[in-house]
Image 1 (cartoon, helix red, strand yellow):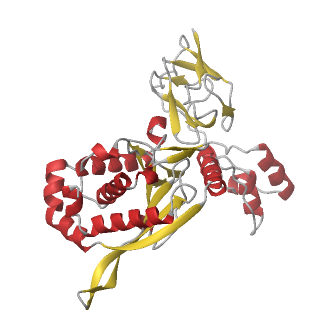
Image 2: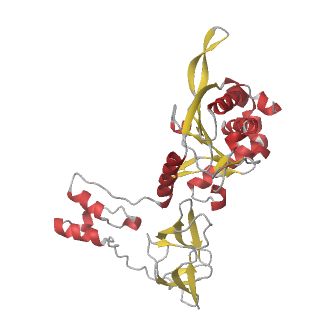
Image 3: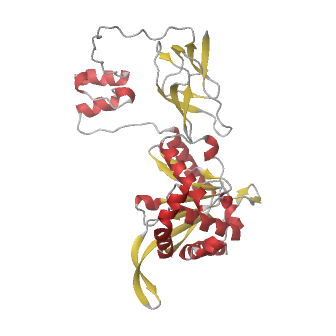
Length: 370
């Protein structure tokens, strides 16, 4: 029986997707549940498993094609024979010929280049036009289409810059109290909860305390209305090879230090594996981004629309600090709070960042909720 292989239902916020890489060719057998193709949206990469075992009889949409929800991209014959069992005699292995893209062949012929000496950098070792140009010249340019995720990031950043009056306020934090607290309880925490006690849970808790004191930072603009959110969904920016994604901690104010650390660790792992769901990447009322893990000392983070504020964290360095009339060395970080000045006044933004600073410098305030 022939079965249509269709693009899975995408979320309402995703209108189309790109076919990345077929894992099966026409005529090959696929087992039920085996991934047939990777499909990239502007947020995640989806896997499309075979619903039944069978043979791929026809591929209707090639890699790189733009597709929509429910579109038929291939046909699967559930009655088709599986691959023949291997002969008892060892088969003669023929060397695979490199796959040459049409544009690459044209330029290779013009330059009289030997295909066998050109290394392919395309999917599956395909030889691209750029590979040929590089082989025939010491100077070259490569034109690589943006991934859907990168294009979406570019679109949202421009949208944020155009549609919001972004201003950033800065402050520094003496992290000695948190460093000492982690050193004292780190082993006990990990032994009891099965997760390391990092710094991010403290930043999240301090940000939540500030959002509760200054609810406008957790609000957004909708037309001529200010929408105040009575819940706290905090987006945590995660950098991956494909680009930046922002999974959301739902009802973050209800989470313990343990819950926050576990969920952030899980987000990071699944983000790198492109296993986050669309639902985990949608929404959010406030965001936190940590450029410090890459060594950033200071930056001005861009708001993630339609949110109105974002907290930027930077690398922690030992710096001279004045304490009780004496200069001492302490671990210090710089914080940056970018906010939409159309909605949030400087007074509120500055006071909110000072509140975050005070909670981080005296973490007992977070534990006592004062």
